[in-house]
Amino acid sequence: MNKKSYDGKGDFLSLQMGTTKILSKLQAKRPIWSNKKAISDVVATVLIVLLVLVAVGIVGIYIKKTVSEPLLGPESSCLNTQVRNILSIESACYNENSGYVKVNIERSLQEDSLDSFDFVLIQGQSKESQRWRVGGSCVGCVLPGVGEKKVYDLDAGKSEEGSIVHVLVSGCGVASENVGTC
Image (tube, rainbow, N blue to C red; front, side):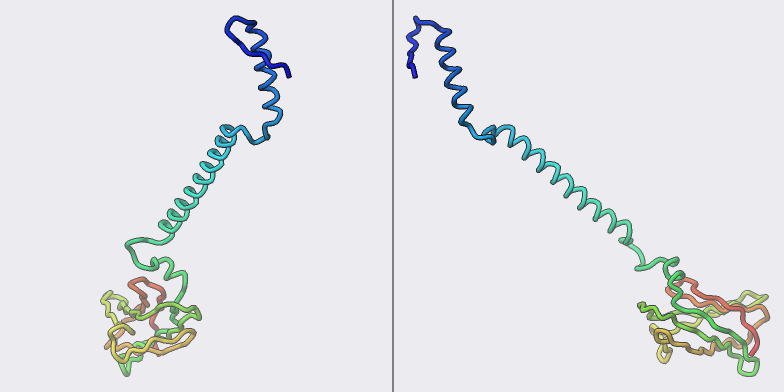
């Protein structure tokens, strides 16, 4: 290799050509991934995309959880309680001799957290109502087991024609039946 030094008085073009040759030799020996600025741009872009995807996933999970579960409300809505069909009335009749309304209840096979329910009897013409609680704080009031049928005698005193008995779970009407005669 011909070494030339530039003393400030020589040919500038020869110096430039010599520098170009040196640079081209260095570039030929440089590895493919030696352009660190280009690599850092690619890595930064990939990291930003990944961070955005993770953030969108976290926000999506939070929104789904917030929308699907009410924060300040009952565990299940009235509509959910009605759709699950926890309790049904098979029959309801009034016994004139005893003054009781006999109600046959069937509990569904679904496991649920039923701890009490109410009977509401609405008299036919007068629209007077009476209420009885089963379970909860009622001593001796036994809930039907899962899939079990149970008969309840409600002390109505009297029952008018056209009376209806309703079953309420957590204040939500789940079943109704017209009261006949036994």
